[in-house]
Image 1 (cartoon, helix red, strand yellow):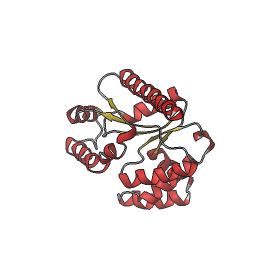
Image 2 (spheres, rainbow, N blue to C red; image 1 turned 30 degrees about the horizontal axis):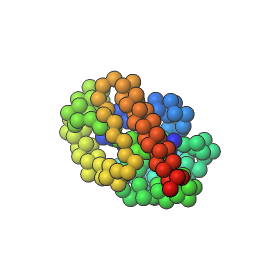
Image 3 (cartoon, rainbow, N blue to C red; image 1 turned 45 degrees about the vertical axis):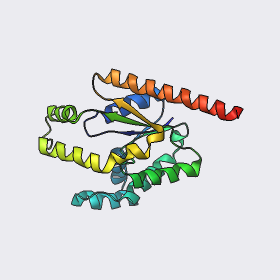
Image 4 (cartoon, one colour; image 1 turned 90 degrees about the horizontal axis):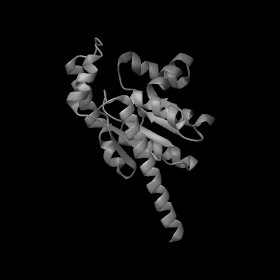
Length: 196
């Protein structure tokens, strides 16, 4: 399965990505991990990303896309992958479509982990990190709404919304049930197309 995971900060996306990657047997590709790996290895993309990270600026799309393109070309993604942190914007989603179009392997689904703002704010505050003040957390929620939430409409045809409230295993079960249902529906529509 080729999946993208999206959701506001605090929705538990990273936790679910790790669990789902194991359950589905596909690599979990996190842009945060890619940045760290490229910076540590001192690759040209890593050195370029570091310049932006050092000044606190956003790493440009072409650098992030370059890292994702390189990662998706590795053999372990042949049977699928789970992307976490990319795409974050509609232009990045278009870039991903071009990458996947080149291999004839479109996305199977986009899992959107949804939770009320008050729940995610409380969750993040409870972690007790010094940089997690309520103002900063709410600012990150607004950035998500402005930049990433438009992906929900962009991916409406393959979007699966997963309520991200409750125990981790319940959320995982909802995600897997949604994927199984989508797979079943896709199989039915393929059968209808074959008959017509």
